[in-house]
Length: 426
Figure (cartoon, rainbow, N blue to C red):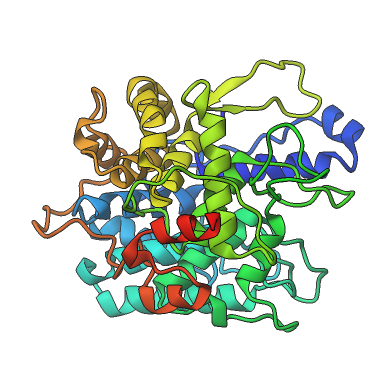
């Protein structure tokens, strides 16, 4: 079961790769990680091998939306995970005794999340300047890991190695990190002169045409498959919708209310494809109020299960697009059903639900029968006393996205997205 966005991205990547060697993928057993002791300061009790930095970062961001500052120990743990060049791996069990080297597998998703989290907690951390500098170093590393097409891959190429293909999720997360670090994403250009938005729109399916099948109009793909075909992906769509609108993980809902519609433009634009993504998500949620986890290729069990994490992400994306009415059913479904999922999957899952509540401007402390903030706080060291200030992620606007750079991609968040959708309909 998918617990957080980056796990979904990994599964999506696996699905794409399995189209190249389906027989091998179906026959190969899943690797079993070696037992890892959860270090002091890290949120959650599960094996952190693949999501240690990620879940810590999401926990910080979710706490900051409610004015909660994590204790110094977990912040220091995250700082210690950073490599000397500014990037982060998914998890380093012994950062003091085993410095990063050429064999360290770097992780753009973990780095992008950590950058945003460190910026959010820096002002009230034990060493604000150190924490801020670490975030800036992470943003600089991300710029250096950009692919020629303007986007980012999950695990960038090792020095001197072949490039790894960009994907919609990683590109979207890095856009958020750059903006939070006050780096204008549209000004970050690859060696080929491509921006992150040049890459982002290439993952968008059109609203009409022979390539659109099975209700995928307006969606985003994680990556093209081996034939170059784009296949609709719920997780990628939620991530890219936020990035295209100029908003981040902790976005609030936009006003006025808009009913998303899928409209092709030539050429595709970030805000246009984001609005189309919102229309796709609306259709996906219409029948049951939630998204589903498709069976993995070659899996013996073909049962379709509810996808709690991506449903929460879809709520955030729809609210950010001004479609709060279309997101209410999914939020209500999560309030009723997601408690056991969050308990099982830990801090990253609780954070996703907090983001959904925050986007819909509901109280995360009264999420159905759950107090999400209390449950999240309980997964790690007790946080500092509430700062009694307005809940904030430590950024200037919408989870780190500032109007001064949003104007550069044609999206002015301050006046909502209503004019964007109505203008495109004309």
